[in-house]
Length: 208
Ligand SMILES: Cc1cc2nc3c(=O)[nH]c(=O)nc-3n(C[C@H](O)[C@H](O)[C@H](O)COP(=O)(O)O)c2cc1C
Image 1 (cartoon, protein in one colour):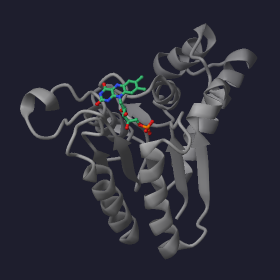
Image 2 (cartoon, protein in one colour; image 1 turned 45 degrees about the vertical axis):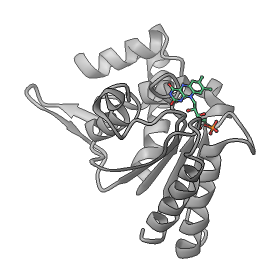
Image 3 (tube, helix red, strand yellow; image 1 turned 30 degrees about the vertical axis):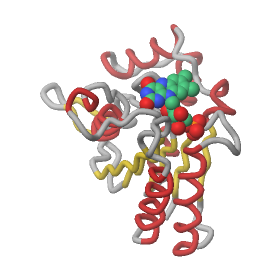
């Protein structure tokens, strides 16, 4: 199974989300050995992503709303976006490891999403309905957060991270979505939360 290991982990050994990701892949590799794994390190390599400047937008609009006629400049821009969506099409399993930032996702991950959510590449519109073009994939999101967003509705309403990721992946066709969150990282008495999430990540990975 080809795996896309997509992560935003600016912190090294102190990163809790990195620990959760390590737990997942240790267990996954026990079952699957060295399956092809494509790593996309967004914290280190975000500058290599298209910026979605005027020409990227022009290419996007021409493909989405026009006849799809791209001159050389726009074709190059479209190719760069397609290389990123090719990684998605090739993967059977997409693992996204990211902390929550300001109730949402880090900007690096949003930039990647703005690159890959593209008509004809990852979704289509037939004049009436939208449908996703990514088929037969499983998405697993591993996250850690200082707050607790799962225990009461007011806090759950502040979570613009996991509901957003669930929606945006389903828009591209990936409806098989699982999240493992270690919440309450900054709350006294929640020290066990990360170890519990690591145990859930190991257990899930061993079943894949
Ligand atoms: C820029 C920034 C914004 C953050 N915003 C939130 C937030 O809105 N809600 C929250 O619960 N935690 C927030 N946190 C805390 C992190 O989600 C939390 O500490 C997480 O465990 C960090 O992951 P890491 O150890 O992998 O870096 C924020 C952290 C940073 C650096």
